[in-house]
Length: 193
Image (cartoon, rainbow, N blue to C red):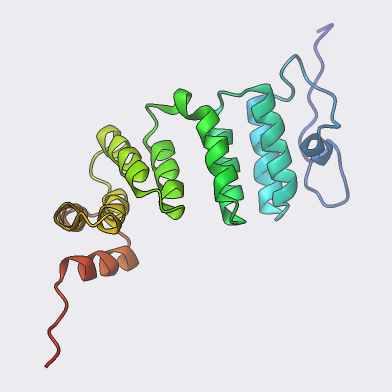
């Protein structure tokens, strides 16, 4: 049909010899499709390919451009925040999530990511608030209860921490490593003879 451009498959667009696809879009050089750049699905596919190819810096740039075009996209924010946290830029990861937080009020995974990053900065009171929000949206996650227990314990709220750890053990969602950690938290240390 006149006026409609046919989209080429990802593996044909922007070939760079590495088979990664439209890499120029990660740097913002690709012509925009419409007012908001490449579609969300296309950008996400590109980011996935970049990550698979271990091109995290390019993936970060693609996500930043995606957020510039669509600042409410909480999926982009979460993915970018995880990449930033992986390279220990926790404050920048929190800043990214903070901008999208009002649009992610009903997303439990978003709340938990925010809580875990706050926890990494020893902002335990704030972390507890977001763990509670996540658990209110999606109760029964042993991992999230464990995270809340860690922050409660860090604040010296040992009874509440113990309750959180016991509730975490009651779930079936803890990984074996997390289960072992939580069991240590609820088992009193053996007395030394």
